[in-house]
Image 1 (cartoon, one colour):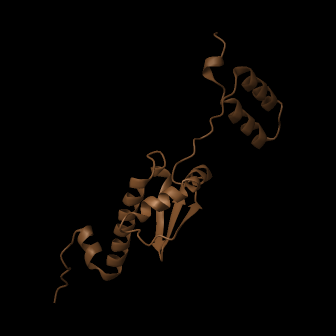
Image 2 (tube, rainbow, N blue to C red):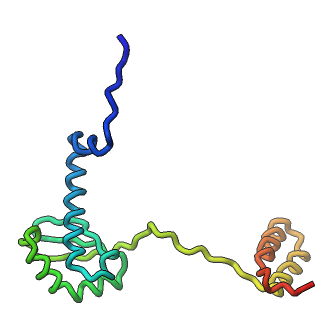
Image 3 (cartoon, rainbow, N blue to C red):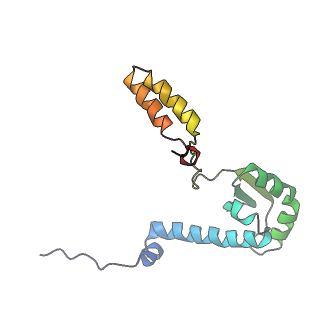
Length: 154
């Protein structure tokens, strides 16, 4: 008897057929639909900063990327509540909660060390007088970050 693996299925088909994954897939599709409805009622500038986290028992929980946008949306909360209640899905909307949760997916810009040629020369001169090899190499690395454009012409 030889082992015969079952035929490969498309990932989308697996998501729709496997019972545990089916519930997760349906929940994600529902949140995506609610997100589109919410975005239809938001100003274009606010859309990337506001995500639907949950919709349960008349309470809509929105995750906002920073405090500034949360404040702006809180000022508009009554209008947003009224506009969302007019939609069929949100007909029993009782309250809207805002939760500020900064997004950590975007990379922070790296700090670039820029030294003038004069500062680099001073650090290098200090490194030349140091006997500790670890400190000396650290100072030499720091001195190597001098701006090339500040070097005097030779």
